[in-house]
Length: 269
Image 1 (tube, rainbow, N blue to C red):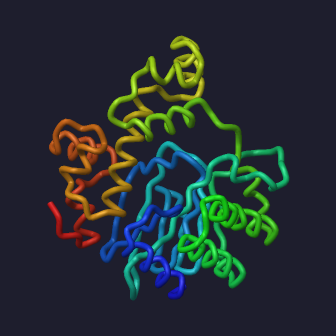
Image 2: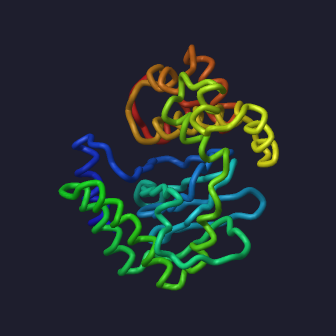
């Protein structure tokens, strides 16, 4: 695991755009209602991750947890002898191509050990960032899914699901977090506003809910992966004031941006 962390740190220093995210903390983090917009694979390289409320799922160092899309997941990151350190890979639905299609119940999560084979595949994926074009990097990314499937984690086939209207809107909002209107969303999806709202109602959500989750999810991501000032992050997330962003963030996640930053010991305002 240390070899993977060393490789990751090298690319983080270069400040390049990466096909994965890295979350780390030196103090415990307890974050409520974390939105998982797409299937998310989390490799815990150091420390421990705990998910859930009354029923807890524990993922220790050297393990992984694969989460299906979910509106709200409680997460607790616990450092051990070393800081908490995790690598996160988000998958699009086309990434599941090549995995046999299974028909059955959708699973909320898969948990397993990061074996030597998985670790080797993961390191190849991370190291490919330094030399490979996006097509090869994406191929390496899909290799991780295929390897897990053929190592016996066949429930991965149930993670794919069918893209929902809410997923498509989430992508649109993420690309235009401050500006997108209902009319623009309808144009991009080629459907009427009444059809759009009817489909979202059937999925148990709304345009407002999706926008809020996308903005706050982006804020959480930027707080975890950058050292940008909170004022800059709030603006990037489409909030007119830092105080508004702070209140919405606390109401949703159960702590303020500053409190979250203190768990990382990032010294920016």
